[in-house]
Image (tube, rainbow, N blue to C red):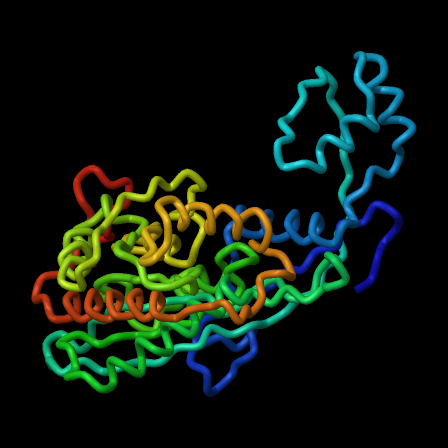
Amino acid sequence: MPRQGPHVLRAVDLQARGGRPAGRRRRDHDPHGGKRDVPLGSRAWLVVGRAVQAGSATIAQPASARAALAKVGLNFDSLSQAAAHRDFHPVSTGLSATVRVHSALRRVESENVAARLPGRDPRLASQAVLITAHWDHKGIGPIVHGDSIYNGAEDNASGVAAILGAAKAMTQLPRPARSILFVATTAEESGLLGGEAYVQHPLIPLAQTAAVLNLDVTNVRGATRDIGALGMDRSTLGSVFVAVARAESLKVESQPDVRGSFFRSDHFPFARSGVPALSIKPGLDFVGRPKGWGEQQENLYNQERYHQPSDEYQRAFRYDGMAQQVRVTVRTARAIANDPAMPRWLTASEFQRPQP
């Protein structure tokens, strides 16, 4: 990738688009109206994220920065070292600065992949329940312990495996009234771009999309006594999910969304556009494990493997927990697809479904 001087920010301007796997089209011939503008927030996330990942964001004149900070009693080198740690908090300097950023950009096209299971009811088959999982990860990045390949085994090859399993299972069951659309989205890690692209150019109109069930990091640690979902308290999907979980003899434990995960995965662009959504998450009460083991494993993953080369296949993976998650996803999707009424947001929710 080209560099422009010592203070360049390396970045990728990735334009994700939706569409069928067959019949690739160039951006400038998009039948839905040409190139889509990704919201600024997503683009900014992408640019800054790639720059930090590449390790190429630098200050062109550190001597000037040292001198300026010294005048207000701060040490440039100490602050730089502290900023490399997770627990760093911004420090008020009382200074203002004019900053110039140079970015080397390249355009990349990547695909969402979709498959449709047609509904059986002529009155409802034009509507759909979506089951989604992003297929991308981080690619090649900074070397960590001699490894630069960011595999994304749990985040989110596990989710893609889950929707493939769900698709296979649903083809062997009686077809539901509404259609089921399986969508493997691209560029989630670059700012939910695949989900955003689908929302801009949906295969089925959003007003006819009953719900989105998202799978982002599934259970590879064994069977659990419980299961969770982000967004249960926002729409009528929550009661459907709880009923299905109980039918599977699973408790539904409220898992506090302390990391804002509901707003950081591919169901969010749909929710923001008015489509009720859930992100179905692994349980934490593992069969045959001591109390608290699930939380410990989740914390260990977040601290040591999340978005790291070490997120790779392990022989210790167990798939009975993923099977539970897939069964709940399939049964929830079928319950929604067979209900004559469309799901709706609860009154207290910040999301509203646009009127058709």
